[in-house]
Image 1 (cartoon, rainbow, N blue to C red):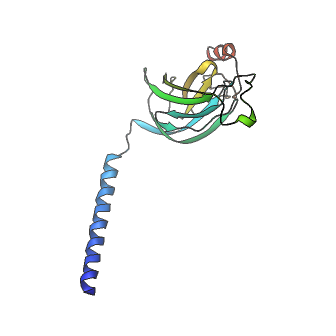
Image 2: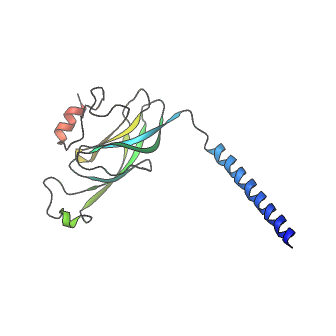
Image 3: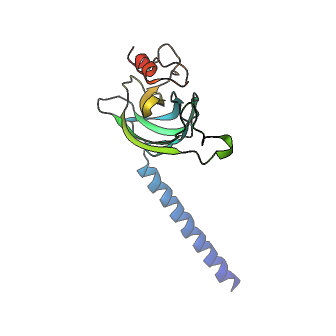
Length: 179
């Protein structure tokens, strides 16, 4: 009886290991790296007057971004190694709706119950030469720009010319973006 249980245990273990090995091969085959894409981090910068509660870029969660905050990176998104006209992403985000100056209902005591707005937009990716971090720039009036760069937005060579994240007026953001 003990020998039969031992043989049964070995057979079950062998079948389990074989199934695991075959599944691993199947996953490896289906997830083969695509040489047309490059792995990238995802960063966000907030130039609006509202806190970004959370955002998703093509389904990838990107955290929250306070007013005048940003930087860091979460992992992982893929970007085409070569930019092409018509390249877009889908961005979904939720933000507070308090404004500056803050509405009376946006107090610390009322945190978590502040009014919020949700958005979903298809946004073009600005031209890039080589892949870098995907940078989401939240601008006034719920406008958004997407850059793929290694330089931070306050670097002189960054094409946005936005500088460090801070609340901006629509006029200020547009004048910097069109330089």
